[in-house]
Amino acid sequence: MSINVDLSGTDNLPNEAALLAAAARLDRRVERMADTLDDAQAKWQTVDSFYRAPEANLVYTAMDKPRDDSEEILLAVRSSKQALEVFAEEITAIKAKRAELKAKIATAQAQDKREAEIIDGIGEFGFLGEAVSKIGSVMDSADAFMDQFMLQREADQLAAELQKAEQECSRAHRALVRPTADVPPISKEALNEWAIQDVTQAYNRVQNSIGDPTVAMQQYLALLAGLRPDQMEQFLARNPEAALSPPALGSDPQKNKEAWEKLTPEQRAVISQKVPSLVGNLEGIPYSDRIAANNVALDLALAQDPLPDAQRDVLMEIKHAADPGRDNRTVRGLISFDPTHPPLAALAIGNMDTADNVTWNVPGMGTTAGSMDDWAKGSQNIYDAQLKLGGGDPAVVAWIGYHTPAMPPSTEVLGNKHALDGGERLASSLNGFNAASDGRDTYVSVAAHSYGTTTTAHGLTGIDFDVDSVAFYGSAGLDNTALADMRIKDGPGGQPALFATQATQDDVASLGRSSGRTDPLGDGFGAHEFSSEGDAERELKQTLGHSVIGEDDDKWNPLHTYDKHGYLDVGTQSLDSIAKITTGNGDEVLQREEELADTSRAFEERRSEMPYYPHSFGRR
Image (tube, rainbow, N blue to C red):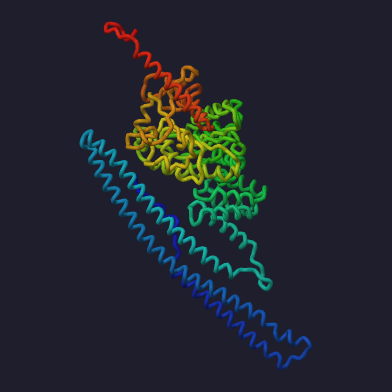
């Protein structure tokens, strides 16, 4: 992994000498103005020696008001002058810090290059060298990731310092143009320009996580709502990417909800049409609003010109999966959508605003928005199985809300970079639902497959409430995330309601744990195990492989999954159990597991009592 740090937030810094020169010019000109008005007033006051009339006192004091106003202007200009001088000092300090940071970046890049060369050299020493080289490459990538993270954080902090300095300086200047009864109003052109500048600054704060993200979001929404139609068009003309740019993570979903509710229906409608990716990914607001905005965003993304064929194919896959009328199934809608390359999307099956039971289905390695139709198929199967159980109105989220590790020969699945990023995004999505549900008594669960279990374990340590249950299937292992660290309510036996399964013919999951991750089915971890081996009495099939949906004709290929025998295929024991676990019926699953175990033990006992004939096949 190469180290690339974005320093654009502090590009094109102003010249300190020019700032100081401007401050000096301001000071000279306002002093000249003040002196002129003082001289005029002094001369005007001599009128009392030759002017006598009833209104004489009004005439004598006619110059007092201009003199008083000039003193106010003098104070404001001096404040502006001082602000420019302070800003110049801050720019000098920021430039010094930026130069120091660039030196750090160069050192880190050189170190990363040297380590990569060493690791590549080791790989030339046969099989063992190649293995050591791969491990070293993973570790080197992790080190580079941390270096980039820390250096980027310094760059972002520096950009935030610049933003704050600019705002303080701008605030002082605004005092110069405050309209009063005695001063002509500011031109419409100037007011128009300030409105566009203000909303642009707010947009940059939201996108680049500058300052408090919650405050930045509140300001951005309020400023967007205050724009006239022509100003909105000018803002988008200057910032064309704003329409399809989802906000950065971090804003409080409850505060987002409150800020959204303060807007009028008309304002919400305009913002949803003009800046749809903001609304479509705004955690905490009603999902119906998000779905409507994401439909607009998807159409805008498809209308881009030029649009690479590969990007168009992914967007069309999302559009096809999100079609609410397909197969006469229940309503579907995109509750999040990031059209940047490669796109991300979360598809809700069911009504998120009214559901009694909501399940997030989190994918693993190799699942992308380009395979949304397949992931939605498995999620639809969970929804249908939940619906058959009765007891409420379900919704299932086919959540491709993070960039999963690439398939082999990539070794990304052995690292935790994608799990950390995905965990943060999953936590944001879950917290958003908790705020949007507005106190509804909703059963919230998570189902996760393969590397998705790694991601989910990280995500469940970062939420601000406890989910009701979790089902892991075909886990690639957890990154030192103890069960106690995940926010899960207690279930059977007073233990957290975390359930896990791995089919005996799933060899891929075990490979995913070869990097040393914790097996949730391991001794002492505490997960409740459920079977994927089939239940003949209930005519439920065995899972034969690692995939969610089985599509292979080879029943015994250890790396493939036999047709209609995936973890979420209709008629499998695994799907039946996952549907029950994610609707609060985990006890029923464990009870059936015990019944099957008793039957197996009884069979073995009867078998052991049969006489043995050495020259025959088995027992009689």
